[in-house]
Length: 107
Length: 107
DNA sequence: AAAACAATTAGGAAATTACTTAATTAATTA
DNA sequence: TAATTAATTAAGTAATTTCCTAATTGTTTT
Figure 1 (cartoon, rainbow over the protein chains, first blue to last red):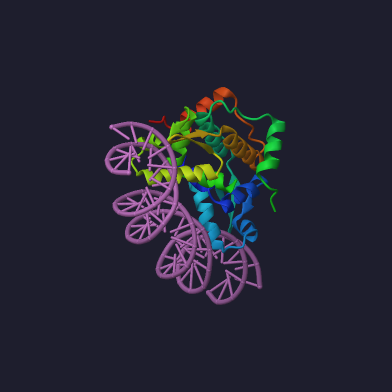
Figure 2 (figure 1 turned 90 degrees about the vertical axis):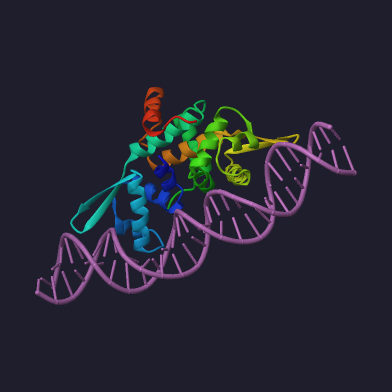
């Protein structure tokens, strides 16, 4: 669990997860979307993988990464339920509102 | 939002939040539960406060801290909904299971 | 007013993190 | 087989984080 929160601490890594939410991508495709170097990206991907948040799949000379949504959901929901069980999950509309308030659009 | 995830990256800070989930505590009471120095704790509390996750209330010579559950819930639920909207909040029993799997008991 | 107590700020050292370029590994194409 | 492309590992540096002790601020008690 420590590794999950550690992984989520980086803006770049959270952005990677958001990209992968739209479907699998190769390391190179992800790299195109960032300013920093490919080795730097590779490091971020390794941290996400070791946290269990993404899975890799090498096909030919490409390495495709995909989100592991259950890992994300189980860890966060599980932990928050432990800290403040009173704050239950929001209803769909409330989540939409929360999304608008707390996070900008990507891209 | 960055500050929230940054704040949650530390095991000690997550533990502080868990303590505060049980009700407000003074800085000193929290400090007793950790090995490190009071100034170190003070730093952690400042980071949590700047993230909006805790609120302080000075009464006499004591400073009491309390959890701000909405901030925690809104940020995490909001973000996760954006990344993988498909993974909806778990039902109560599933959350209990997830809790058992991903996090040890405190103390 | 002086002493004691709670909490924070200040200053600085040690460890960790994030990034760079260069080199390497592995798969494809000419 | 040689050259190209994708991705990673290696090595080193700069910035950040985390923690300590000492000093400071503010409040209560004697």
